[in-house]
Length: 307
Image (cartoon, rainbow, N blue to C red; front, side, top):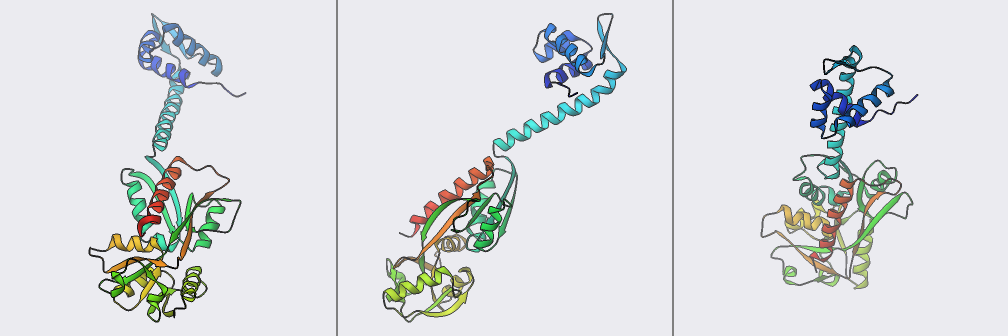
């Protein structure tokens, strides 16, 4: 038979054990003496044990009560700790955050946002794993990670997404004549050496389409897997680059001013579609929800950063 022992019964039992008096226990608990007596009586009924005998006006603990107090203390301490922990989790000061992130954001933008989020949350643990966008979507759909950030995946009933379209920007060396322009088009880059992503990547395809639209000559001098090394090459004056604004923003924040690379809007538009992803079949924690809000607000800022 399952017992129906309550938290209040255990509290009453502990205070009577400590004080040896029902009236003193009632004062400590802020309850009436009859209420505490009833709690003790009900506890004895549930346990089918006699816990106290009255001796000269005091409550004398039985051997069974002396054994049970250790169990009661352990239960009460555990409940108190669990309550405190859950309050801290609710206040976003404790817990764990598991993030999967595409390379473009994993080295700069995401650590910067994570650092801001965790600055006053020293007891929150975080995991930040960098993987290709397809792997990020796979991890989130299988519920291995609380939140993912990557290029927008194909529709998947196991993933909830918040989608953003970010306009790519043109990176040119500081002091280059093109840096004087308010925006740079494909014609202005015709025949100039370019750093771009590997063959078949959507960004490369879209960039080449923009050049074709303006009948400009696209010279693919440097082929790379991410834009971070491309910006170093631009910095050295070896090439130009049409890169995502996430990499651009991280680069600017990591460099002393004036920045050695200048970023300008690029025309025709080359768009990077990205998504904040969460498992569809598992409710998010309060910590995950709050972090997703911060990430979303930073992406909204990026949409307007280079207009």
